[in-house]
Length: 134
Image 1 (cartoon, rainbow, N blue to C red):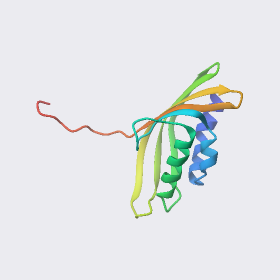
Image 2 (tube, helix red, strand yellow):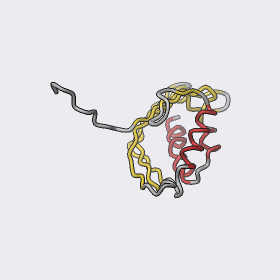
Image 3 (tube, rainbow, N blue to C red):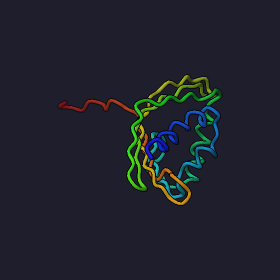
């Protein structure tokens, strides 16, 4: 089970490079809950993920290079989780060069149509501002 889930996560590298929205969207359950690094604090649904991916890919004039590091997967029965770091590199349409790391945790559920992502949480590390008295 864990090898199947690891392969699903790693398959994102090629799909992102190809900007293949539908291949990525097929990994999500219809009712997926999304906590993305950008955009609303919480969103729900495969169509929301499709729109988000189209906007993300459209913002890049180059290929988006994705590298996954420290992938760990656990699974038992019909549920599984993965957490990992990923690096995103590329050139946006306005010429901005992107090279950033993101943390991600993904929850999977196995159903009749195979393993689907039912929960995804991605965040970008940041240093909070100091407040008086710190």
